Length: 577
Image (cartoon, rainbow, N blue to C red; front, side):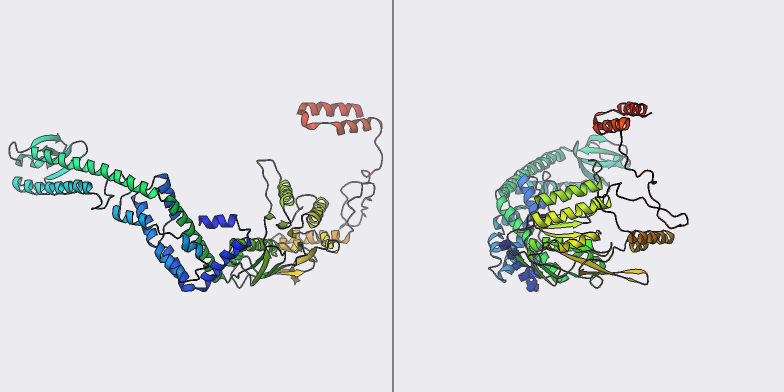
């Protein structure tokens, strides 16, 4: 999983490396039984990279070593399966899948099958590994057997069935008798050691002698086991480079078999990639995540066709029709292809992209004091400055965060800049239908749109890309789908028809050139002017007015306090009276 995340974040740029991965994926896909065998073996392999890291840092415990031994035991079988396949394709794997047998044998000889978590409390080292440790363990074992025999004998002699021999770290071993049975003890048989609420504890010289023997052996055994374990750990640490190299190779094989499994299950195809040619041709491509949610039958695939000489696809169409999905599925296909995986399409041919830049969605940065539009512009700026002709740009609704003409002007200027200077493959979706005329002016730009039809007043999305521009955006219809009130929608439709019936003023017009709207007294549907006719004037300011205006223009607001501003306004008010 960690390696897969790295590959997603850092797709390959070298065609030869990509094709090497593709060849392995294709071979594993074609050899189902061998792939199943590899998967079965890999499920028995623990996280080798994590285990190697714990060995390197010296904090490995007995259970970690058992997991390492178990993992290493399955490497020979994985090698054997790969040897049954095309050995030229797996040459690197066969060379680097080192089972590290010396480490596996060491762990097998030294560590018990079920060691405790702690490495300081014994029961780690297998019997027969160290003679001195075996002697200590034998002393402890025989001592405990003697304790059991002593307990049985004392019960029989005293007639006290609940007499028992116990141990604690403060008082050592002791004979415990309940208060009710103390009177049954023969006189002077035991030496009193501790009095409890419900029992008395005793000791004998014989028990004291055995205690010293058992505890001495136990302490020495624990110390020796810890020493032996650290020696074993250091021996394994000397082979850390081999373990790390093995972990990396096992992870690669795991990712590649998952590529093959996913490609088979979802009918992905092997893409054809080119280091030099700029043709992008995807037939019936789909978004793998959205398709998984919707189901294969519900998702409508689309082509992405950009000839070598075509740089920009200008995408228009209604909201919710699939423009953003279309753009994102292309980016995902590019990333998957350059990871070495097969792609969601019937057929795919694409260049190798060096970078992918996206400007999708709307988000602000309140902490930095940046509006949604500012974030949008900064992201677009980053793409324009760093993109190369081999990059992929995805611009979704650029310019919508400001006034209509500002946004439209910026969007057109960005398209022209990409076309003339950046020359990267670009998908640019927009609701500014006025921009579709750029197809006539920019030779490396083409219009496409997402099909939609209006049937009985209802909007039906076709979710299919078609050549040419869309006829309209259907925004009111989308608002209807969102459940807006009917009266609001009716009013919006009326206003829309009024606006569409008027000729938009030129962006270079001044207040002097725009005639005021005349409102007839009996025209209830007329759009009222925002300003009364008196406001629209060509009178030039003179005298005091001109002085005040000049002072306002020269004002440095950022250097003034609120009191400074109030004083300035008061001064202008007095001057104009």
